Length: 600
Image (cartoon, rainbow, N blue to C red; front, side, top):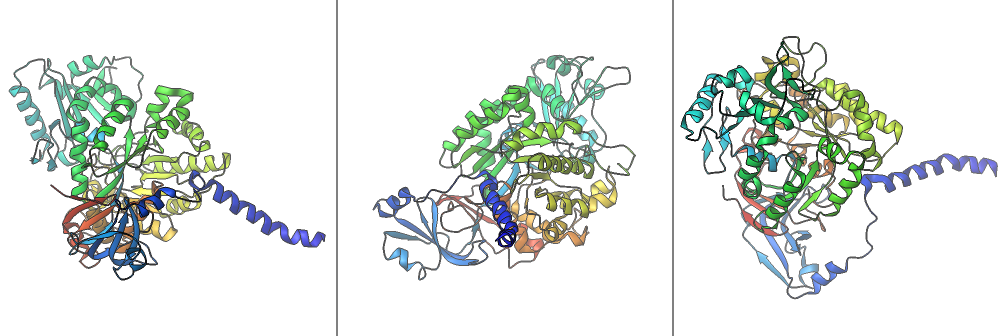
């Protein structure tokens, strides 16, 4: 008998581990055994089934990958296949056939797992000084401002044309790597020593103020705020870097940013999303301006039936920590309880380093080309695990901003310490951007159970630029190691961080870059071993992107029970040269079964 018990000991232990895995996976509640509301919808004469026909439907279900018809009931997918295969449903219930999409390619609605819709809507309505074309909320496109001299000339022109001497200048879009030079208090004072001038870099990891703007912000020479740059004599240089310093510098202008963006700005961003097939996004800086105002405005935008984007809001841990202290997790739970299927709070966001485009990423040996390095963000790395621990213990998904390979070490070190403190299954510790890495860091990510939300656009828009600016060729050519992530079994999604990293937001373009890895000169292939196939890249903007933000049970593939969210294309991404995928026109989207034709 003893031998028999001993023989069963290991399997029984394995069974306990398996049960623990199920119980703790993704902190999901137990499923309901019945769904009476669905049964009622089926029986109600006023809620017929709608069947959309299409030239081809890619379901992202490996078992049943293609279809030509999709049935929708009460905003959810009822069935996929053909009109013939759906007869067991259609012979029993009321239905209509809608042929609007009969000549289109239908895919699951694209998922953008890292954007900043609210903050960016306000930024994009400011005086634009960036180096690329950018949509103007007032209509049309902004003209590029190519060089540093052009930036100074543009700011000088704005100053000259303002009739009110007290009206501040708030400009957005400076990109030192593309435009050259730098900005600081002295240079901005040369434009005006009486008018407040605030310049927000394209990625708002840097803000530049002149003397009047510093005075308005109330920041003194003796400040100890992390990220406030000073001259050798101890005076403020006018350069403010990373979360804490940037928020202090921008606090006086937040009301104007809100006024220019707000509900109208969110709808503008929603129109852009629809025009590129996006139906779900994860806004990764909730609270950057004001938690309550952002929630109010986003709720109002989402109440418009023409706003066709689900929004997952991820609060900034720095904001939660400053506002709620030890009560931050409880405050988060109250926020999360207010959500619905179109708008909800989920996850928590930490930063380790700075911006790749603005050259403040923290990197390993040998550092930057000039021997310097980037910036640690708001939390000293030796305190990072302690700040993450309450969220980890609460089962809340942690997102860790990481651009440089040295900061990736910091994120992975904290993940290892969290696992040692309280082992968790299916925690989906999400490494945001995952720009610079080594193959062994990718392997460690896999072993620790991490997932990645990767900015692949850097490989196609900035790899050659940063070979000569800051990071050198080895790191820059290997931005976004998708091939390594695939080989090691790490689940990843693709994102743009739009518009704060000087790249477009177009999931189909992200797919093309991931497959071809052609740099910004249109011909150079960078790190060919990091290319992936078309199907895997399309998964990274659909079902795998859904997985990395914990929404795979609701969106990302077209199977029964999920939301009927589609991206509707005029061409087939599986059937064209990868370099042409970005050129496929997007007809629009479908959200919860309702058609939304792109109007941009």
